[in-house]
Amino acid sequence: MLPFLFRLNTQDKFSKTLTLALKIQIVLISLVFISLLAVGWGSGMFVTSQYNQLTNDVIREKLNSVETEVRTKLGQNTTLNIIDDGNYSQYILQRFARVFFTDINLYDTDGYLLATSRPKVFNVGLLSEQMNPESYKHLRYKRESEFIHKEHIGELEYSSAYKPFYNKNGVHLGYINLQHFGQQREFEHQIQKFLVAIVNVFILLLAISIILAIFISNWLTAPLRLLQESFANVEFGKTNEPIHYNKEDEIGSLVQDYNRKLEELEFTAQQLAKSERESAWREMAKQVAHEIKNPLTPMKLSIQQLLRTYNPEDPKSGEKLKSVANSIIEQIDALTKIANEFSNFAKMPLPSEESVDIIALIEGVKEVFENNENKIFIHTQLKELFITIDKDQFVRVFNNLIKNAIQSIPSERKGKIDIDIALEQNGLLVSVTDNGIGIEEEKQSKIFVPYFTTKSTGTGLGLAMVRQIIENHHGNIDFETKLGKGTTFYIRLRV
Image (cartoon, rainbow, N blue to C red; front, side):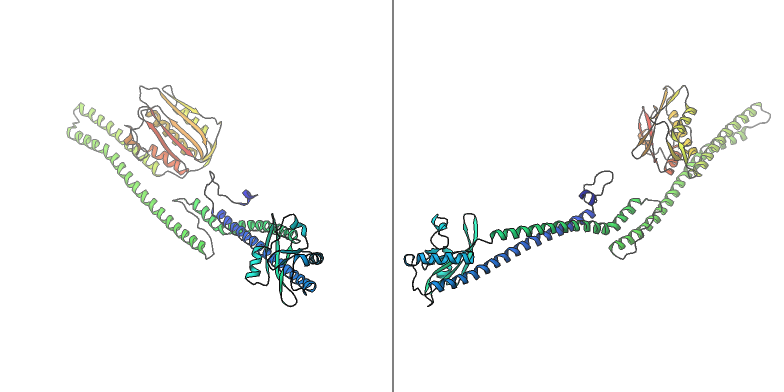
């Protein structure tokens, strides 16, 4: 039952740290448990003390009554000795013992036994015929009017009361002793019943305290769990919902601070995103300007040279004009391609998502690129896998990845590209592996930078566009490479 009652914080793996709710439960239950133990112990001590007090009062009352009765029988004596008064004294003590339901002993002034209501105990040597020395000291030397304490016969403990015995003229004749056995079993029975009652109450209160501790801890930690869930859902750069909590307490102050920081975080994210966009566009503008200026210079020089040397009457001038015109057209085509790629990258639309079989999509791209020089293999245990993506954008993703893989393979090497598709714990993993030349270490950090390319041809926007598409779909892309052996690109997407 307890594992059900106690709430543990479990996520991907069992948490070894106690939750706040469980700590509150343990503290509350421990306080109740300790309180109940203290009450039980105190109650037991109180009952024992009360019983001892009651027993002493009963013995004292009986002792006074026995002393009065013995005085009526022996009060006229001026002395007591075992020879003259032993038999008669024993007779009256046995009679009084039956009346008062207790054992009675009579000692002389020196503490020696004169008579007893139970002579067999002394005859077999269970008790000494001399008076208890502690009692004798209190009555004889400390002049106390009575003395009650615990005595033992083996393991048997009983109460024993002593009182000086005087005759009618006030002459000290000896000491009267009462031994109280009869209530011991009753006392143990009362203690047993009391303990049973205490245990029953203890279990009931403990069960109630556990239930109350659970409700109290859950009530106290409910706002904290709300905060925890809100903290877990916070994502930088996205609109995060504030927490609605209208109580003015410590949690309320924390919620207000959280909501205020959330607004600051959102504003900071917007400013950072704006700054990053401006920085990226500035860098891209530099790259575009550089790419445009490169062909403009030779075009200008070619036209200037043509203007200086052109002679309409010279047949070679016509051939020269045709050659320069063709070169300018090629450069213009290159500039047009750069402009188109830049326009496509700048106007990348948000994904138009639909349910697409990613395996069928990749197989379709494979058919376009596969030929005798380059073999493309798809490895997967899945027959189909539908995910929500923009189909056209992901065709561009795999077009770029497979095209880059083919271009990285040297001409003297037969191309082999492996595409692995598998489901992981956190989603879909697609890897594209080639046997090309790999990527040099100094170029690896710039591989996704716009307008950076390791090829002699191309705009350098392909992989930057791939990363942007994948990140727009809440995924990520990274790679591993070995120089001279090949490169593997990993795409991870939520399913």
